[in-house]
Image (tube, rainbow over all chains, first blue to last red; front, side):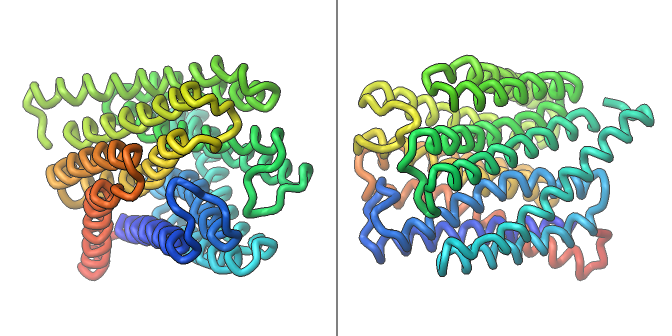
Length: 132
Length: 132
Length: 132
């Protein structure tokens, strides 16, 4: 699974970086912890991180189940689309929240495809009499 | 693991749907990104999603470790209870936040049972001289 | 994997406990759901839980990939540092948010080390001609 592992490590590193951007925006706009509001640009950085958290939590389980039971190669390829989608999302959301749709779609679609693939695989495996 | 994989795919799909409900509530109540407050009903949808995120992050690792080392069948059964609990939680929280206890208990108990099971299994495995 | 499984179960239990502290702070300081602000001490508890959520989501995948492909023993050892780091973070943040750096570093460094280890392993595996 080296390709899927690398995609995962990059996604984790990307999420870490978004956290650093929130920390930097905290300093730059004078938003002291525990506050999470008070400046529009800070809030954009914060929402990018939170939305990526939500997407990461769906993406990683889907990625690894898909890779383990269906195809590690396709999993890695869809994972690369996800990584690009998140980068586009982060950049465009901070610039203008209204422009976040493309980046969001590019992260949601790979994940939804893998979830659908897992459901089809699971039902098929049960019908073919697989073990628990 | 087809049953556990299907439960996981359903949990991921359920979480995705909660995200769509937040997005719809955003439009309906005029809460523009990056804001996450300003309307009580929007905030309920938002808190349902966040609380489910917190629970999902504990549930999925517990589910797969339990399934891998203890019992995939019990893992899938507890997972079904979790899915129902989350559906009850989402519906009752939006109707009235004070009624969220039942749905919360039905998601917390399966997860806590699996965590306890993993701890017992782990300690027992070490005492019996298992490999790292 | 009993050691890694135990570390994971403890991390999940720790996160659960942080959620209970938020619920208790909700009652104590009269912050009714769905609100998440209105009292500084409540907000500290809430931010501890959210920051731990962010860290847990990076830590667990890194832990298991590192344990599966590189070393379960080192994964478990780094996981123990992570657990201690989170405990220090939670205690010091609630006392004074400005003192949160040490606990944060002790959770970020084990995770970043494992991510780096996975990247090196992954690239090396591909160069050596591993399967997908």
